[in-house]
Image (cartoon, rainbow, N blue to C red; front, side):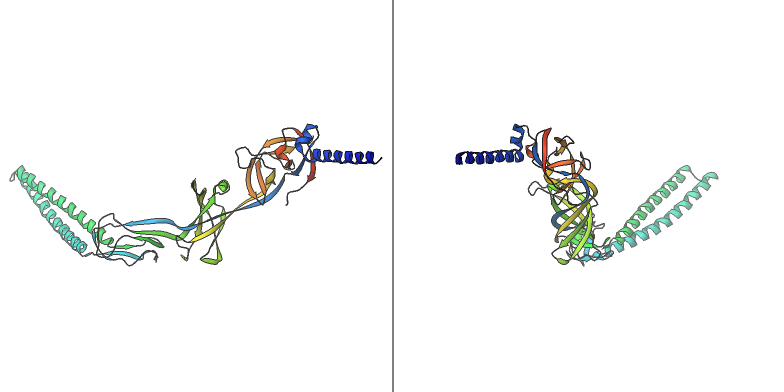
Length: 366
């Protein structure tokens, strides 16, 4: 009797163990043609917010290169690297004495040329009248006309020289065209510059760019116009708000990051190029279909998919397109409809059209 009781108990334990294995092991359930045990959740619509982080440094919004328009000796350079300059502030001043002398000389040359033209014009008119009266020769008239043409050519040259001197005089002082910061100063007092020589490099900082380095797996999430909050150790109690202005299409092969540029207004010029900080980029999807991220097979590949349980209790593999990922929940942009049930546990062992049985039901937190 004891032996029979022990055998019955052992048989019951073995039977329960087999049932448990069939209920929890997809492979064993498939061998005995039993439904595979899985967990499922319905596809639901909800609002997701993804926060993407990236550290980086401040850069000027753009760079202005200032070159000389004259050849002259530098008298004064009242700015140095790192100085904040306002629009119309003096940057460089040149010696204008030679330009003033050239200007005066050309002005007198123009006056002299005008007088000469008047005289030559009267001379031509006189010879024309003599020829009409048969008292002069065509050769004399031709010489007078040539002299008049020469006088007009001299006037044109003098006028051009005068205009060049006037323009040069306008450029003996270089003033800042923007509100910005001096990035480079490439000239010093007593140096002689030449035309088109680079002398000052300015950075526009009324608006600055925060160059945030973002990991490459987030490249599909970062988009132009997204809002961002930036914090800087230099200003620990403040948060600066901005938006994505541009995105570098290139990925750093060493750090595996790409650069997203956050545009930040900087009216008080406190944010200067080189300051380090951290950007939190916000991406929101309102009222979108979403599933737990664990339900997705090959989420980072070209063919993300999920197992969908149909009304007959069979699992069907379906390709899906993905969007925002936030708090272990993933947006599904295509491939699923609201209310369909997807497998969240046991999907890695399923095959197409397997019969399944849900062991528990969980919901996506709203």
